[in-house]
Image 1 (cartoon, helix red, strand yellow):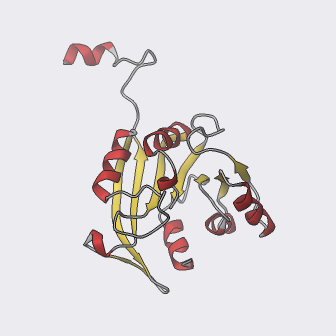
Image 2 (tube, rainbow, N blue to C red; image 1 turned 120 degrees about the vertical axis):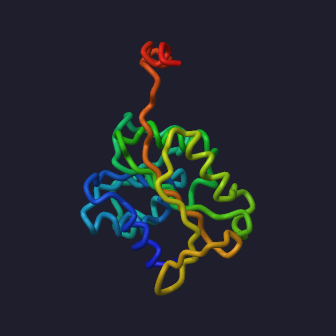
Length: 192
């Protein structure tokens, strides 16, 4: 709805690592903007109809798939975006999959609706505090969080959650401290 919001989201992405997965790409407006700037983008959506619309509008790099079971190898992407799509997914599962497909120090970018916002009744909304906890639990380090109010000409940041239209989180993938056997390395046990 707001081109200025799409530009704002693009500005939050890494300038170097340019391979991006957009989970819940819908009709592809954000993804087309990213491609125009030279990013290599894969747009994934569960809805074949949304992907058909995106393809008719010239989008490419589209994959029909489930955000709970991403059809990509571990470490495939520099960034994963969930643009207002996390509420359609089981957050813990989708965030774990995002973590899996991200490269070391990869970025996770989420925009989602706050609890007070009226949206589709099946969309799972959360507070910023709940969203932060879910992201941390999935193995990420939250770098930024903001309460956003998109307008026609600008994206404003507000201080009170009840006044925002979107929650924003930018996180980086935390490296696991577990060994290949699923346990902490022996040197860490000795120090404990």
